[in-house]
Image (cartoon, rainbow, N blue to C red; front, side):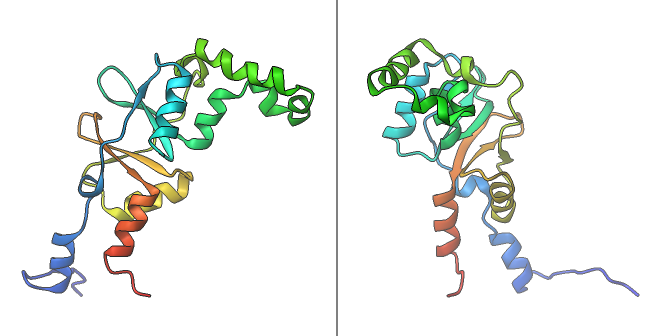
Length: 172
């Protein structure tokens, strides 16, 4: 019994495959940072750009890390205070503000783990279901879209993906 599925030009299935949106179709250019950039700059870029996270790139524009906003916040909070919330309560407001001033001396690279997790990336030709599945599985509101050489082509935010899916015909 032949179980192959074929489609002819004009078939709904063939048209759907031809018209399928790919990551490159909805990717946008977002500001990036490097490991050498100050943490203060990274926070500023994210906050002023109203971004859900940041992409850290190397000198060849390849994503080194994709950091959701909560991970960018972790760059700013000293590890002992992240691990022991009680310790943070012992610091008065004047000294708590000092932590923010000390960030000027730290770079993004200083705060990244020695072995950062693999960046959340998809090839430019990935379909939107692949993008959605990756975001859901990794709890990431931001995905870097890369070319065959691994260089950054653009990014897809959760908001952009959901907006695109909502406008592409999801039924009520």
